Length: 311
Image 1: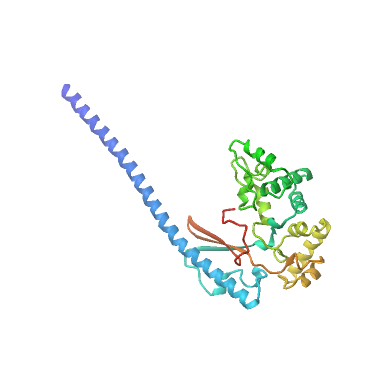
Image 2: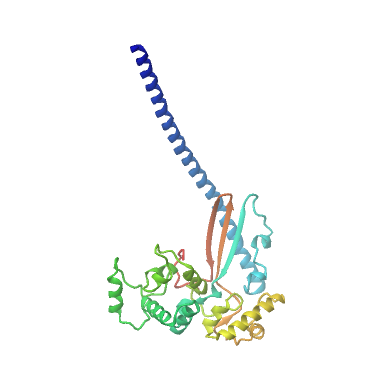
């Protein structure tokens, strides 16, 4: 009986050791697989990075070529909507490539907007007039152009949970608005993530400094705020824009054509039909892995008040 108990104890101890060894082996395998997958992902992203920057260089070359031939960049329909096809290049097999363009000059230059334009913009975004006025004042006080005394502005921010002071300079990033009184509650969620209102705002204003908004890429709302046109005029312009595009007039080559087609008096010192400031975003995807590179193509000096950011 004693020998049986000893044999049973040895068997139990052996099984226990096997169990411990199995657990250790499983954990080691999981850790090794995780490290292998992480290294593979790193290598894959390096490969996609090379492809993305190569495609970006091709896109920049295509834009330069189209601009040289035509004298200006009016609209992607001009021929640069698909740079790879324009350049006669084939996307490597297995990769999904997406090239997106955003014309910064199809927006309003925030640094050039007046207080009245800011108020109208916030109203167009759906905010009450009193709220729109408060936001315009808060923004101008933040960048140092407002009427409120600096001391009272500083105290407003210095008594926050984490004290800080207004920048008193043009906005450097859309995300900077999360620190501005009024904006942080309306344009961001509790975690500081931009909400739909913030995204609409960013789609209508640019952090770049320029004078003329591109009629070819500006939305009716942008044109309404930039020129203080009435809603009826802008609605008529929207229907006219839909009509002329259906007539295969894809973009305007001069302001006279734009005014005649849309029925609005576009001033040459405030509007244009070409762009000099295009954001290019290249996304390269291979299965579950992707790599995104984004840059703004603009002449030197066109972005004096913009600091590169994720904004």
